[in-house]
Length: 264
Image: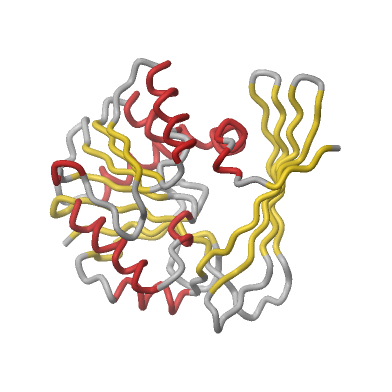
């Protein structure tokens, strides 16, 4: 079997096949969060910002639902894929190339909702960058607007590696995704990650491997970060299932936390 070493963000189709299955549920959740927690605009048509928008699955879905959507990403291949998706579906959105910690919104427009759901925030590897990102998002939101931020929390006492596996198919293409997370380094505040995709297409099968590092957060570190950005108030916690009925506390009882932050 052929093996490639490549950034999985450079092959957006296969990345998209893996994660697109949750798109409808996530979009529904974002709209429900706005209705429940925002003290600002609550009309049917929202202005939505997605940092690290990737393949554009949620950009397109939120645009399809009638919202005015903007997003940025650091990978040109992802942005090209997202633009093509929008064009094929005859949808409109504003997309641009930018970094999480230093992005600038075109025309200084203000948004009702921002979201980053799948731990992409952890690519920002230092505290200054994390604070900068949150402040920039806060500055792009109207008063009472909401930022929905997903973070996988780390257990520094857990010395075991973690493994997750997803299987998905589309148009005759099968993708098996195996993600391996090594124990976190508390001193460095990082954890090593590896993703292997096994792709079957046109009668051929090959693997593709990507390695990277994430910044780590436990509950205390997440709370300390939020204290450094007083522009936001934590108003609710959920988990990666994105179910409004499943409320959580920001504590050590679970790892996948979705923070609902309101712009003060």
